[in-house]
Image (cartoon, rainbow, N blue to C red; front, top):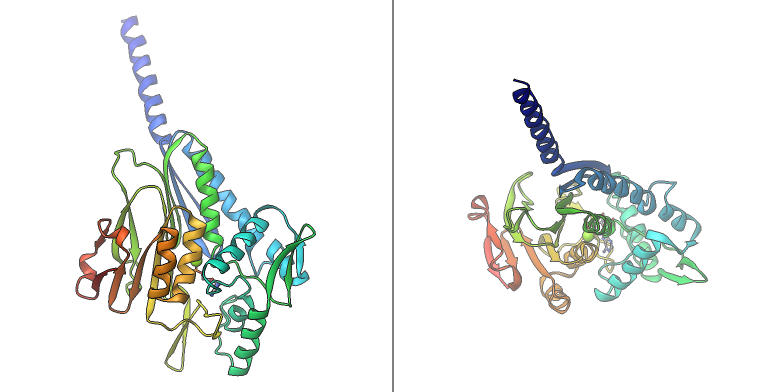
Amino acid sequence: MKKIIVFAFIFIFLFATACGEDAAEEYTSYANAMDTSAKITVYGKDSKAVAEECAELFKSLEGEFSATDANSKLYTLNTNGNIEAEGHLYALCGFANELSTLTDGAYNPCIYPLVKLWGFTADEFKVPTQEEIDENVKLVADSKMVFKDGGIYIENGGMVDLGGIAKGYASEMMRSLISGSDSTGAVISLGGNIVTVGEKSDGTPWSIGINSPKNDGGLIGTLSVGECAVVTSGSYIRNFEKDGKFYHHIIDPKTGMPVDNGLVSVTVVADDAALADGLSTAFFVMGIEESLTVAESLDVDVVFVTENSISISSGLKEKFTLSKSAEDEYDLIFL
Ligand code: AMP
Ligand code: MG
């Protein structure tokens, strides 16, 4: 009898431990920052600790990159015209300048005066006068960020906006944390910024949905991918209508106007999440043809969506599956 009781205890102990381990195999943390609800699911050992660490990191990076929070480092840079060159802000500003060169200025880190003019910073939307637009196009064109004497300086009075790359950078930083842990895989989702890390436990590829610009919550298709970043920029994400006209948050620095080239969303698939984020914004400005040249030179893949077409770069041909609901609405074009 004694033996049976001892065995029963051992069985209960082992069962409870196994359940405990199972529970620790997958953990999802959540955080609200950068106007986004982040969802970070980590698989494997220590998933809870690393997922929570990622959520904290996301919130702390907002304190560096927010253009509107008076306590952020970027805010200090924009109000004082300079700040000490160190940490994440320095890294991201350096990348922003590189991206601007790579995209021939379609991505412009000094775009803030124009974004503010249209009211996209505080969601107080307005259509500016042509005079205001011209004035701010000139200001943006004349401004640049330079690094000198251990500082970041904005020359010629402009202001910096990192909204087009901050989430990509944040998810890349989270990926580093997760990769350095004992976890086996993860999916980091920051709105339209998705990063997959490692492998799924069953060895099959990750399946990442691309949001439908027309149908809130619906998907136009899915991508079957390994470890990578899948980042979408879209006019449907932040916009307003005035006098029957549609205006959105991605601004052409040359005209000062919301981009109007037929694109409604651009998804970039790349190894690096900050690059994918920056390029999705820049490609939206550049249009399909010009973007493809840059995409090929950088070995990244793209999905361009217009009102009635989905164009896919060659590297995604085998990886993209069109949603049933999108079949009647879009022509599928292989570039
Ligand atoms: P995303 O959703 O990553 O495409 O980023 C869009 C955000 O980037 C906007 O809300 C602006 O803050 C900023 N932005 C808009 N146009 C540009 C541009 N041409 N270059 C750099 N940043 C931009
Ligand atoms: Mg972007």
